[in-house]
Image 1: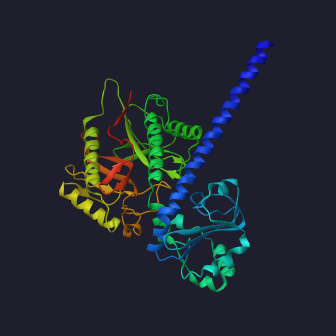
Image 2: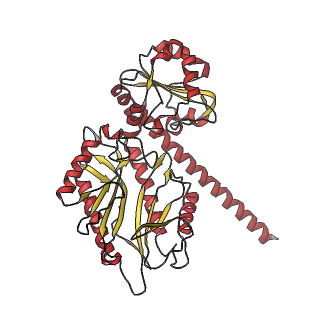
Image 3: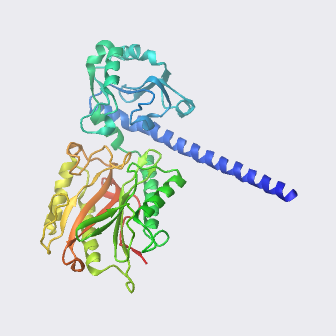
Length: 435
């Protein structure tokens, strides 16, 4: 009886301690986001509003239809209608949350005024803004949170000021894509967690050749996210086998075999930050101690491409200009520029596709981008503090595949500084080996 009572007390103490630790982690994450929010509002938002000639920025939300920026702006309980309102006051942006409430929003202390939803019309009229930015965007999903109903509602509430609504697309991109020091530190932390899980996934801790399936690896990675309170903007991790004819299978019940060349593409979400990275592994055949020479050569050529990208990408008036400068350096080094997934038959050439894109608050961010799939954001200035996913695909012939080309994808996250590309965690520097 005494033993049972002692065990019960021990279990209770463990439960209390665990709950206390969970609470501490929750508070620590909230405090981190509050600090980020304060510095973004103080240091980044004024410039973003000035540069884009926006006098007032109104973000409209309603219960069940939150704007993509809800986390960034402070969360809070949103009723039928709610507005976050930012007004350019010169060297500072005035902030109001109308119809939004809750302990965490209030305790964070970043808003000057917390008011009722019915105040909006008078609030705007008192400030008399010429240009009112709203989240409507043709090209950036994360800056397109205002619904058609919300737009009509806002025009009705604002009266004559409704004629002054303009797209805040570029403002949102500048606000999100220009980073503070604590944001960069937080994103780097997320990157390290992402890297550690990915590299463990491609090891014998997880993979038993002839037994483990691709989806077993993907589900293991998802379980790691769940255990650590991490999210993802990519859903199921992409774990795949590639061969002479391309991708064989992705995150399916395909059983991993010796001799397989494995890839994965994924990212984690930590706080309001999402990573994007790739890793490569080879499953050793009996008697092998390293990847076949053709595979290793293909990997080494891809690393050469990445090294040139790292040495060349620097701040520029537009991201597109930085991209063209990078292509000039690559072609001068003998690499062949191709369309996506369109390698040539020339066994002497390494064919290359570049896709370095903004990253940060989604796996594909909304800041300036050098990726072919973000043509509008190629026209945006590539500024220091921009977070980029340095992504490339290199195709090199391998004798082991009858000179069919091995597609090597490399992707890791970096920050752009005045010096250029600076990595935020150790990048892929080898083909991981599974015994």
